[in-house]
Each structure stands twice: as C-alpha cells, then as structure tokens.
Length: 262
Image (cartoon, rainbow, N blue to C red):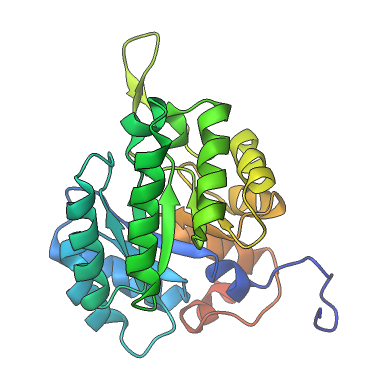
C-alpha cells in the first residue's frame, strides 16, 4: 500500500537502495578499496555487496549487524570452471557468510546447445544454495547470446527454481568491427525478453550499464527488482535531491541538503 502523499508506483530512496547489489568486482581492487566499498554498501542500505570469493570473510565482518548482505560471484567472469569447482566455490562462500551467489553459466555449453549440461550445473548449484539458506542468481552474459539461448536459459531457471536470472557480468567484452572490445550489458530488449520468459517466481537482475538514477528507474519499470551497480552513491544522492520520498537509508540522511555535485 502506498504511503500518504506517495504515488502508488513511486519508489522511496530506501526501496531503490534495496534494489542494488553494490559491485566490488574490479580485478585490481585492494583490500583497502574493498573495505571502502563495503562501507558504501552498508551506509547506503544496499541489498548486498557483491564481492569476489576470497573477500567473503572480510565482507561478512564489515557488514555484520546491518541489513546489507554478502553476495559472492562463482565461476566469474567467464563461467568456464568445472562444475565441481563452482560447487566448491559456492559451498565455501556460503559457509563463510555469503547469503547470495551469482554464478556464470558455461557460455560455450549454452552456445553449443548442450542444455543437459547447463541444466545439471544450474540445478546442482541451486541445490547447494537452497540447502544452506542462500539464494542463487544465474548470469547469462547476454552480450554473447541471441534471443533463442536467452529464452532457453530463462526456461531452465524457471524449471530449476532459481531466485534470479541476471543479464551480465560487466566483463563480457565482445570484439567490435573497429577491432576494439566493449560490452553493452543490460539492454531493454533483453530485460523484456527475460521478464517475459522467466516464470513469475524468478526475479530479474540487470547488470552492466546501470549507471544513473534514470537507468535504475527505467529498468525497474521493465520488471527488474535487482541491479548490479558501482555508481550507488551517485544514484541514491540524485534520488534524494530530486525529492523522492523517504525513508532514507541511515547513511543518506545528509544528502537531502547537500548541494548538487557533492
């Protein structure tokens, strides 16, 4: 039910914050940079801080006592690890404090149509998560895929019963005609496709290219309930300055009066 004075579909700043997995996945991050990023995730009231597997213990300590949880990536970023290795990463990460796991599918197997392999791997990791009280997100890496394999992955996620289907790692670089490498990430087309073909119990996470408040609100309107983002503070500060309703995350209380550009 909407609060007084709040349009039915207008999110509060806190609701937007709870959509965000604050991404701390750059390969060059030092422990000091990770600690600073974890402080941002906690201060902003994000859903999770998304970290590399070795960083789960320090992340769990940094976020203890807050509603922000730890999310660990598995088979990241290319999905090529043996299923047994992905399982080991998953079990270890959850045992060390991760509440959510973002796994990358074996992209070559998906492109080759070996759906039995892909289904078995997703099922085994989902079982490992659910048996331990954790959630699984399945990363498709949509930059590499046409519509047909995206739809098939949605069907697999639905049949297995995973928590989320996710677009991208943010590191799925594709060679462009000029010879440079870049990625697109979460396109409106692919988000609509995923929302249409995933069952209602499977939520959608947009990752790659969600950098502004406008991006966040746009993908939310497409049915996305979680995003991966690095520009968390800037997006939420803009929401505060534009007067989106409270409550505010505890660490954003001063943003209402902050000048633009802070």
